[in-house]
Each structure stands twice: as structure tokens, then as C-alpha cells.
Amino acid sequence: MKPRGFTLLEVLVALAIVAIALGAGMRAAGVLTDNAGRLGAVIAAQWCADNQLTALRLARSFPGVGDAGFSCDELGHRYAGTLVTRPTPNPSFRRVDAVMRDDQGHTLVTLSTVLSNQ
Image 1 (cartoon, one colour):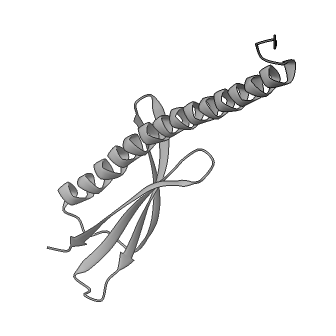
Image 2: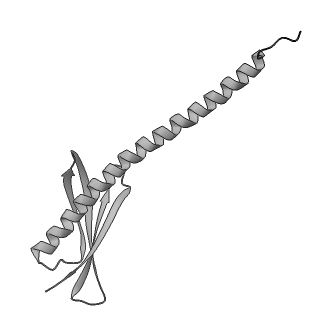
């Protein structure tokens, strides 16, 4: 009669396959968690940029060409940004970009608008 069951080598191979699969699953879960945190930061930075551009529109003043720094607090975090104002081919308009960066200086979001002098 032939003995039945798995050899030690077969069991070790099966355990190695399970360990690799679990490691890949944990890595995927970590990446999803990091992406969720980044998405929250991008949304909050977009709110800050949108608020700055809306404030410029409501002020109804024609901005000068140049860069201006600003910061805002959103969702318990402080965001730094830069308003980049550039001329357009039509001198009655200016292009304004609100560039938001994270703590390491990486751009999170850039929003643009065009303002007129009227």
C-alpha cells in the first residue's frame, strides 16, 4: 500500500506561494492607503487655490504681472501657494495661475483663470 499525504517539500512550496501572495496583497493595501491620503491633500489644495482665484475675481482689481506667495489652512493643514500672473496677447487681460505645493515642494494642483481690467 502506497502512503498518502504531502511531502515536506510540497508543504514548504505551498507556504512560500501563500507568503508571496500575502506580501503582494499587503503592498497593494499600502498603496491604496497612500493614494487616499494624497487625494485628500489634492482636494484641500484645490479648495485653497480656488478660494484665492475667487477672491481676486471678487476684488475686481487688475493684478500686476509677477508672482505672489500665499498660504491657507484647510482641513487642519497649512498649504503654501503661489499666484503667478502673466500678461496675455490682449493687454486688457491677465492670466493668473494658482500653484499649490506640498511640504516637499511637489506641485499638488495648478488652477488657472483669466482676469480683465473691466
